[in-house]
Length: 245
Image (cartoon, rainbow, N blue to C red):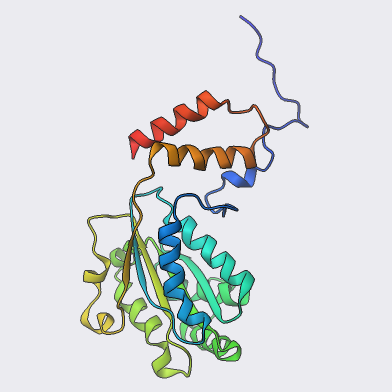
């Protein structure tokens, strides 16, 4: 049996290993132009000094919901001070304290300790920064169904969307994201929330095999050295991925 050569400690197959991290934001977002345009349309009033609109993003896992939001939020952070976008992973942050802490950290780029601050104080700090910058807040609640399980969904939507009633700030926007196609996030909101939560529903359909091939090919080119994944292997991966969706 032929001996398989091993890599030396100073060798690697990766040009950039971060490309394969779940939180990686690609330079180019493939095959989500329609969804991107819809989200940008909902955000555009905030850039013009008004309030953003709300959205519900629905689609099976792996259909680009999180990546699309992250890329738009990254671009907003880079190009304007009129909007403060904050991404919240509700798998990890399910309580009002945890969500407000993440919003605080997204605004101030400062990590709060897990205890020692009252949620009301955190909220007031958030509002003070919004007033100072005269900016609109947009919060993405990714995997918002976890908030429903935790019993905090209505509380958080109500409090965030009604910040403008207690403080002199622009009305925030919420992008609620779910991969559970059997769940209606709007129907889960109670009457007090629905009075201020009027979302546009944006659907993310499964990628086709050619689309998956484009996405994987882009990641391979950015993250691996040439020849590491031959084209036939990439085609096979794309085919299997498309079948498993």
